[in-house]
Each structure stands twice: as structure tokens, then as C-alpha cells.
Length: 306
Image 1 (tube, rainbow, N blue to C red):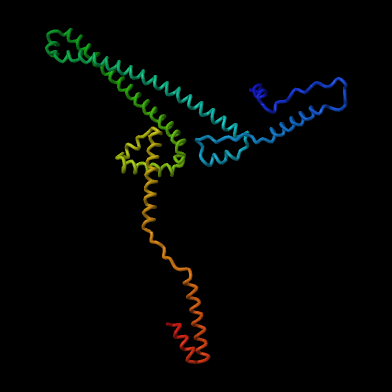
Image 2 (image 1 turned 90 degrees about the horizontal axis):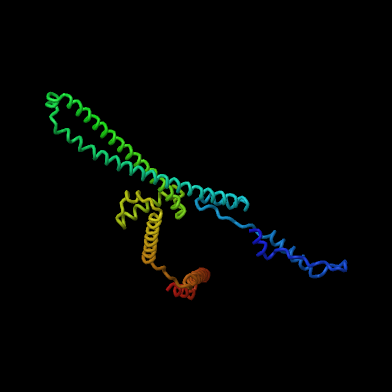
């Protein structure tokens, strides 16, 4: 990589021309220009801002804000370590899933083998029910002892096979429960990356309520069916549908409110000024009437009032 960067870099050092044989004290002008360009390139490289790194997608908003305040070198180390941790986690998760799948297949094969052995032993036990054990004990005591021992051993074998089958079935159920828990945890991380609001418990609770209510109201999905969703893609699609319906409802409410709002009363711009002028004129005429007491001032005031 260093070799390639050196070949492709625009600021790569140039090979200096050979010195003149005359041994002059004055360097060539071209060499000085190259040195100046090289110094400028180095200065630009030193002044160039270091690359910025984005915080991991799974971090909360508070952690991401702290990450942005760190120096670029620290950001690079944290981003690299987080990426390595994610790769290692996914690799280990896939290995565990493959091992559990192999164990589950082996358990299924073993359980089917036990079922076949039990199925073969049951008809043999049925044959002993037709025997008259009391008569056999009187007439053929030795045969009675032999068949009784064989019957007891067969019963014990069937009980052992059935007990082993129950144990394997229980282990299989526990393995499936662990696999489901792992899938849910993995899908939860995917959902948080798709919808970061699920990282906050309060926001996640509100989103779950909105999701349950809207799916039940518009699509007939029960709360149990919503709780059983484990695919992050299905949850994200359902949330998009909920947000779209909320947007449509809010827009319809805003339009209805706008239609119901009364039109504002318009008032002519000159009305207040005219009222003020008329009031001042009446006051002046009233004062003039008080001072003069003449009929002319009284008639002027009456005219203003009319």
C-alpha cells in the first residue's frame, strides 16, 4: 500500500537533477522551484484535517455525542475495535448456531431411533396378554418362570426407551428455546439499527403500544400475534404503516380545523382615525359652546352629533 501511494500520490518527491560539473555556487532556478513546490505539498499534507469516523450504529445518541468529541486517533481505534468485536461476535454466533443445528439433527435422529425400538417392543408385550398365567404356573412352572422373566425384562426395556425419549424431547425443547432467544436477540439488534427509537425503553414501549393498537384496529392483528413477531423486517414494515396512518390522520385533522376556523373580521383602515378626529372636534365644539354660549356654537355641536 505504501508503494502504491507513493506511485500515485501527487506530492511524491521528484528525483533531483544532477549537479552541474562546473561546481557553481548558484543552484539552478528549476531546482529551487521544485523545492518550493515540495515544501508547499508537505505543508498542505500537514494542514489537511484528519479523517472523521462515524460512531457505531448500535451506540446510543449520548455515546455517539461523546465519540464525536474524541480525537481522530481515538475514534479510529474505537471504530476498529468495535468492528472487530462485531465480526468476532457474528462469527461466534454463526458457529454456535451451526453446532446447535448439528446437535438438533442428531437429537432428532436419536429420538426417531428410540421411537422405532419402542414400536418393535410393544407388539411383543401384547402377546403376553393372551396367556393364562395362572394355568401356566400350575401346568408348566418352568415355562411360567421363563416367560415371566422375559416379560419383566421387556417391560423394563420399554420403560427405559420411553424415559430416554422423554429426556431427549426435553433437551430438544430447551435447545429450540435457546435458539429462539438467540434469534430474538439478533433481530433486536437489527431492529435498533433500523429504528433507533427502540434503544430508549420509554420510546420502545410507546412504539409497541402504537403498533399493537393500529395493527388491531386496521388489520385485525391480535396483541399475541404482535408479541410473537421476531423478524425485524416485519416490525419495521408494520411501523412504517403505523407512521403513514398517523400522518394521514394528522393531515386530515389539520384540514378539518382549517375549514372550521371562522374567517377574520375585516375592518377598514380609516375607521379608528376618523373616530379619533370626530371625538376631538366634539370636544373642541363643546369647549367653545361653554365659553361663548352662543346659538351658533350650539348649532354646530348639534350638527356634529347628528
